Length: 210
Image 1 (cartoon, rainbow, N blue to C red):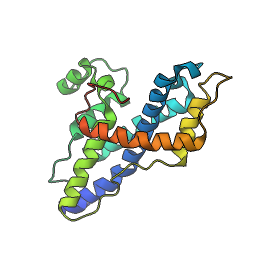
Image 2 (image 1 turned 90 degrees about the vertical axis):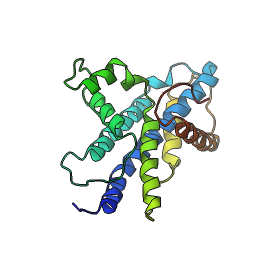
Image 3 (image 1 turned 120 degrees about the vertical axis):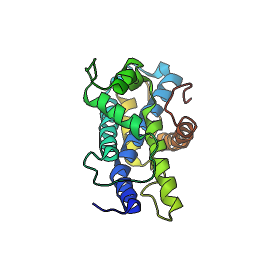
Image 4 (image 1 turned 60 degrees about the vertical axis):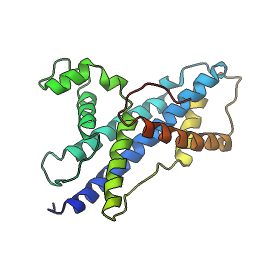
């Protein structure tokens, strides 16, 4: 615990960065899978969203949101901040919805309104996560300090997961693209996806990535 708000901001940045990276890597692979599925439906025997690796990505994204929200909430006030972190409130609401998936009536009117509007389903949660991280990055740059991450790396692990999802979904007599081609596709998709998130910082879905 420190009273220096700048050191506290650096600590919060370190606490959330790995989960931000994991959540966005998961979201990128999921969204790339969906786009490939939509464009090449004739290849598929099953919807890839029903595969085990895809479900694992969804679980990873949700767990990351819980961790991020807890770090931002700072219930014990161990890392008080003087600067605003964008999307903090929304991510805490999403954390509540994820952690209590069958709750219908909420003690908090804010949480009740959030769920009544079905925002736990309609919000583009990766956009909220990325806008939150960018707000921390902007403030760290302003005070001359370096953020932990400023991009979302795509490596062999993400390519292999995409390959696995497609392999488990395509028809027996069809083939999926070779790994080098999938790697190029996923890296290009990542840049487009992050640009899309920047253009929709409030997480509202008014269009889709294609």
